[in-house]
Image (cartoon, rainbow, N blue to C red):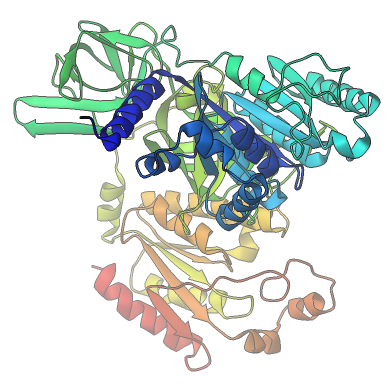
Length: 633
């Protein structure tokens, strides 16, 4: 006798086997706030008898059929649950839903419509095969509609469903529907790179044209939402493109085996094929290919594999293994399109972390070419980049990376931008092309080294970086310090904030972006002074921690000494030798540090000087005592 539990288990096994054979469609729902995204997803789940990923486990406890399970879902409660769950999770990540129909499995990125969470929507778009852009029929095309459409187009989504929702609230007006379609088509033609736009009139709340044709829209003859999703062609990983495999890690269980593990991003590879390892350009050929514990003759796009090479060459995480006949490029300077996803403005000259697949580098943003207005599609001049803004700009990295343009390969052409201090992802970017200067300009190695120059001067070169508010006493202490070092026979140079602005940086103002660029330039000059073997003393307000960290990263460990001249704002105002605080207080001097612009105090400076207790002369002696141990011979 067969027990009923065994029958249920057998049914589940059959379901799982059939389920595994279905293809997967990844799509994203997006649009403005309250356009009906949660209601639409709830309606699709409800009417199509779809199952959440955790509902399958419920089958083991319940002998009801899957259809009965679906019919028992209460639509209103389901939508409320989706909305509440999303609202709780939107600050963390995209809410991904997993469900299935008879013919296909689905992964939907359920993203909020709020402006401040555009970053979540952008994240969900990067892996989507299609996008459902919802539009409230009462409101028409909104700014967020255009922004989301622009982003899905920018990251390479080629198929859009324009779901014109809440038709029931405009009496199922064909005219309103057609006007919205016309407006969107005009926008898409001018701004988007989309292969296919399918407009569908719906009411997510009442179920019109979700899974079955609605009698309320007899004038509409196209597919329903679910019919489109069931039949739209899924673009699979392209095996016809050149072979690319970012190395995720190196597997060396013993001295006789060295395997390179990764996901094949594009193309295919066979045993005996010629490959190249980038950056660097070392060649070899494929010796063997493994997937889990199985040896393969070949691997194609989408496969996770371990490969071994015929030659013992240096390969590590961060390298990309490519076809030797069709390699990707190498460069350290690019034109890119960037979507900024942080409340803190992105500024030219500030240093960030660049991450593309397994490659990591330090990124400096060059001058913005232009910002893109998603409403007018105009190219606007810009000095910086704010939350949800999109711009075309040049970037430079501290080392060469392997790359393709994003249009050629999403994996090797896309990147994220990470803040060095918070370690948060603050932007995403797409590589358009390498700048010609990246290939034309190469580092020239000189025969005389920094160490030889320093040895000639009998000292260890350093950057002594004074930071503090205007009027804190930085320049006074720096001047006394240099005189003392000169008397001791040391080779020095002092870079002062006001003096530098009379020459090298006279083209810069005092906006936050210009201040970042001011310090970036000074940092590069200070590094050259260190390379010449000098002790370089600098006296700059340098209000931002990220810029001071950037300067520190330019030189070797121990070559940057940060001195915080810690003088209270009230004391600096009392001194006000140049009358700057008075002007700032009266509003005549905008962006003044300590008044209308922040000063980020150093958390762990090498030396802290309290000028309320220490005179400039004594402060210089304190620094000399420190330097005798660290710098002077």
